[in-house]
Image (cartoon, rainbow, N blue to C red):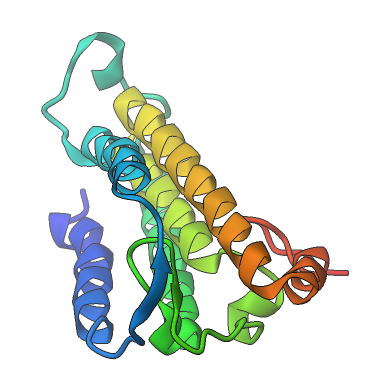
Length: 188
């Protein structure tokens, strides 16, 4: 139907950009604990495994959810690309303050440009959209369960990140939170 390259390309672009951009970050001032970091990562990684490991035909997890027609697959791929684009756009605006773990960087500034003007966590939002698109394209109940795990993992991580940002920026972050959506954009 559609080559595997179309499924893999957005993720290859994402990983390549993330590796390239990780070179230019500020030094860390404060970071989350080891236990929280790897506990959340375990949930997210398990979600990705369920989404992408097609041989996991364990009972109902291997069954189809939708009729996997051409237009459904194309829609899923389009959502995946849109999500990856949002995550990369957000990463560009976050710049030197990005980290794979929840951190406060030296001389940390609160970012409110680009996608951060409407979203507090556009990287997580973009990755959530990308995995939803992938799950639509793959069309297995295991992928649906995987998407739920990824969204739960990123939501927990985002809440913990907000606690650290509130402690650092106080009212400035509270005002930013009132203007922006958590994982869905706010337009008001």
